[in-house]
Length: 469
Image 1 (cartoon, rainbow, N blue to C red):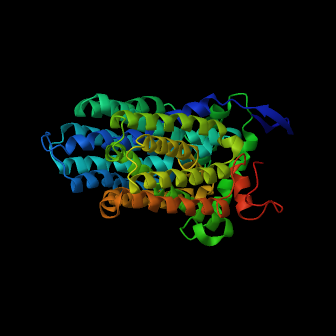
Image 2: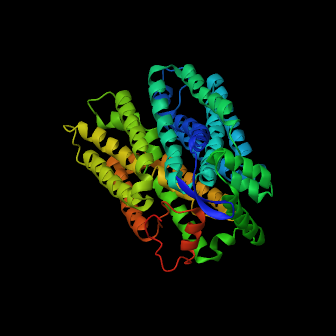
């Protein structure tokens, strides 16, 4: 990327190095890989636990709590995440998020009661909540605009890869070894992320200019003149210090209200796609559909497709734009969910291929839009002084919605049938399409300051739906 720096008092184009930006994004996103494996755990394990002849019998109600408590834990983890990230720093908070993950896997390995499994899933959820708040925040703060979309997409890519990881190892390993293999993700994360720099933006906000300069030099390359970028960060930090960082700041200005409404809406709709219900109950969906394909194999195919398309999303998100991908994603998701509902409602058992095609296309559409973009934009839409609070509220909305979807997915199926249940999600995605068209701003290719200027109408008449700068 060619960037403007100050050399001998004059603006001069500079070349930045991106290697350490990729290293840091990948290392931090290993926690997203861990989150994906946690999400996937129920799909291969719950059918084993529901076997009356198994070593630990779990009934349907208990199974729904084992699945749903992950979301409750995520809410609990999200509540202090912004405060911890602001007080301790992004890096220390991200490192701390690995601890509940490891504890949860240890408990799962030795659990001999449903209560311990519920505790383990709650602990894992706490880590997921911390991860979803702080990792996207950290990445957005060190990434330069030209690759911020790519780096932000790594987070969702690793969640998808974690789901695939869980489906594959959950199919071929027994209960204990599956948990051991999943725990190794956290060990690798700790071994790599400990060496990564802190967020330069956070350091500048703490008045630690020399440390911010060193961190930015690592992220941009030693030959890059960091003075101009540091000056911008310092100005933002000084302005933030003069403003009240209370919750009221989230609704005080037009730009703040737009950012909050867009952020909350996107993360609510992300769960109203039914994605976690689909992941948690993938094998049960295929079994209920009577698909000719083995449920384990079908689950792996669906997760593999999602992972591959998350790679595609990372490549194209800065070229196509966030908003276009979001609207396209929700439109295709609505079609896939409608077809799934049609399959179950009309009992099209002679079309056993339809659930696989629909769920695979569903994963493609999710991976290209509603998977990565809401988390990515949460790191882009808010100024530093409200980012922590806004992220916490948004993640709480996201995981509260996830809990409702996951907990009541099975009761909805039992009451209304699979067909009507999937049509309820279809209606949600139709409304998500309208939301993306009328509410969500475009942030692709713009600096964080440009985004704030446009949200607050300070960009000389440029519309909030404009293309990349």
